[in-house]
Image 1 (tube, rainbow, N blue to C red):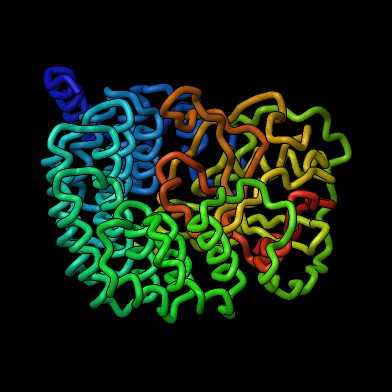
Image 2: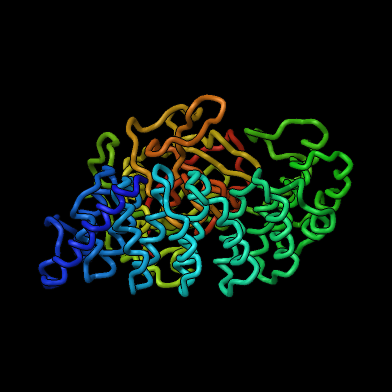
Length: 501
């Protein structure tokens, strides 16, 4: 970002803070917007701005609110606009006293890196913040700064390595391992891989271990030592074994196929499925992009018990699918992530739930409108209209995702409109539900922001490389084994809302 522009933004923000100091909290409100009973005051107006990618003085006023819930939500909205003018106000707010406001200011500041270089000095400072939630947001900002090529971002690897090696919070350590995957191909890649492997050998927390294994698989397969590889293949954690089974295939050393033989009889269907894929790749075969039949040797999981909850009645006049707006959003859950765990999952309170009936069993997903209000409104609107009923799972990929939501059943169709992305800190771990995106053409295709519509996917195993671009809007509550039984001839039978939980 141009330094002069950022200085002007910072001065403007300080002027606003001074003005705010002389008014009462009751006077500091956004333009009035009609809301539903129990909703968080002023959230709807913030959603309007972020969904239209509109930078406004109202957002910076809200950022200075005495209500830290409003201020934090405004920080998220500013970041989601990706407008360079938000850099100054967000940068100032990274020093706020309240933990949740600092967290969202840091996260929002990181979102700007997609279009605007951000200060690595600021990122370095917040990586050392005393609050774990802030450090989690800072790790994400560092990863985004590296992806966006902010000046000096390469030097952030040392800070992330220190967090991986010594942070007391396991979520911070796990996120640091994930972020370090962004440094593959750098001059110090071997040293970074070595640090991840040392951390893996010393780590006792299973969740952190599979994050470290994922980073090695994704970014550093060639730098992984034989000793770490063997230990990973024999690890007690299912998700660790999955990562290392794929890591073997990525190394492309055919003589290592024998290391996979014990996993062909693994008790986990996901491990077996990935191992079969890896053996096939090492033998010169292609990866499976479309699963048409369950591979021989994979024992599919037993059918999940059918969910028999009574469905909520569908609206009588659903009409043609339409693009949701802020008036459709459910905004009764306050965003106040004061801990790393709160930044990694839903806020307290009842959440909408949807039962996805399939030809192989049911899946119940719990939706998170606090993190993705328009995405949830869109999904519920389509479900209430019966849009998803009888659609095919047109893309099932082992150790990746099961995707559906196309009325043409081939991946080329949608609902006739697009919705805005709602980037959030929830990980693409196994069992999350996210919106699909269109991709650019060319030699280096990438996801197109704000191109989601009706297609969605559920992750079969962690896909952390999707964290930066794809909107997580819920998670499987029950019926995960159904994913292991799906192939591309299967369909959704009926998608319907059930009671909140």
